[in-house]
Amino acid sequence: MSEKGLFITFEGADGCGKTTQINLLKDYLEKSGYEVILTREPGAKGLGEKVREILLNYDGVVSDRCESFLFLADRAQNIDIIVKPAVASGKIVLCDRHIDSTVAYQGYGRGLDIERIKMLNNLATDGKKPDLTIVFDIDVATSMERVGKDKDRMENAGIDFHNRVRNGYLEIAKEEPERIKVINSVKSIDEVFEDLKKIVKKYLPS
Ligand code: TYD
Image (tube, rainbow, N blue to C red; front, side, top):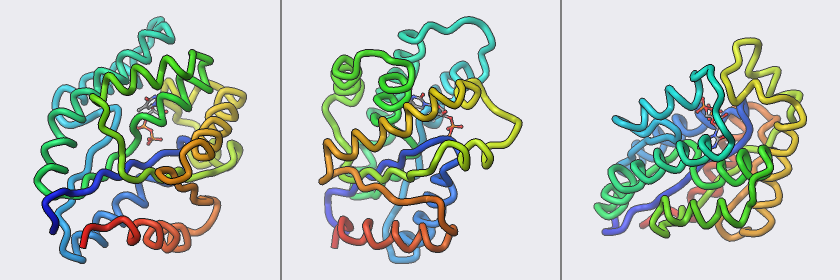
């Protein structure tokens, strides 16, 4: 393991299958001898879990700006307490959602100013960017079918909202092709995982 680890983030619509893929990748990397840390946003271990509870289950009014700041607060905690120390000690950090979720959901989805969100993301992460980001792309009809009837506050935001989110991800990927790779996720779990491994292998520290 090299002195500096790797920071990989996973993005995509609700129901795109990224959590399954992250777990498969964790097992694969560990079997290959890497030390792996799993984290997620919202809901980094500890305080982040409390923030997640509000973001997904609070049933009162939440303003779009307030929602953004809650995601950003959780992000700052995740970066400072979990991601940075792990990467500095040579581990591979796999993070389920990160900066691009805020651009896609609060920016493209809710319609908040995208440049401002990028600036706020930068503050929340103290400038630390993922080495690699995977976007699992899926059409909205399939993703909503996978999510099913039991939807949380974000999943309930409507078809138009989720179409904007999807298009947002594809836009962001075009802007940063070096960092962001898109995988078609309307395929079998095994096929998606093969695509994922091919990409990740190119970034692994030797
Ligand atoms: P979660 O249950 O973690 O969804 P998934 O399993 O699909 O990742 O819920 C996180 C929800 O929060 C999801 O709908 C995306 C949304 N979200 C934002 O709107 N902005 C953000 O910055 C982040 C991190 C997540």
